Length: 114
Image (cartoon, rainbow, N blue to C red; front, top):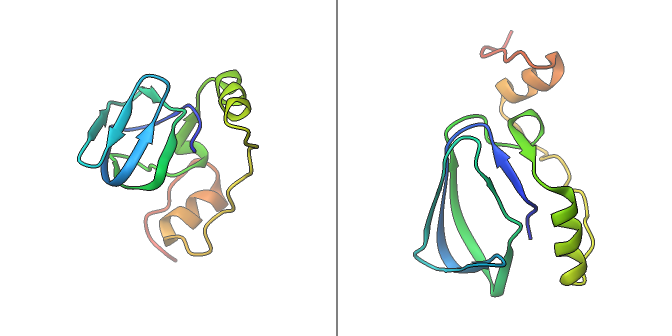
């Protein structure tokens, strides 16, 4: 499951296996989803067999300052409808040096290691 959110950059998702479902759509394997900068999408849930996606964000597409939240009430209702609870995802154990530098310095990206 993923909440209603967006990214600071164009965002492409391609469903490789399984499917994802929103209130309005079922996106099976082979579906291409193109989201432009500023688009919000979700919430969605993987289908009964799960889902494998290939995703690309034309920007710093991770969480934190490069993703922005959507409608928190919509996400709460979605979780309730699916009998689920929201669990924070831990930060990755390995991150590229430029991302670590960004986290350490605030909003400034340091593209070289010192």
